[in-house]
Length: 103
Image (cartoon, rainbow, N blue to C red; front, side, top):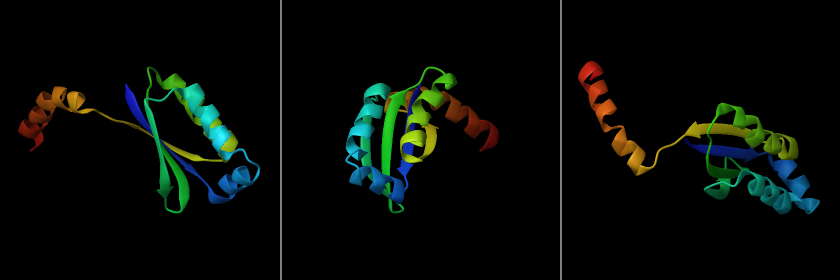
């Protein structure tokens, strides 16, 4: 199943890693281990933020995904299941059933 992992790196921790010359290389190392489908970086609420899309087969994979960010950057993590258009198309009958029952 495809998931969006949102990673927020606190400014102080990110600055310390940047000053030590380790910000980029640590992020690259984590991404090399995760092998995401895609990864995008921006800011959110004044923090360095990554949006990482990857496939997760089992909830037991969550620590392997989250812990490197926690340990390296004291980051906060959010994990959200996401759909591509084909997934949404497959969900059409479930949406229609919900509309009939609750709409």
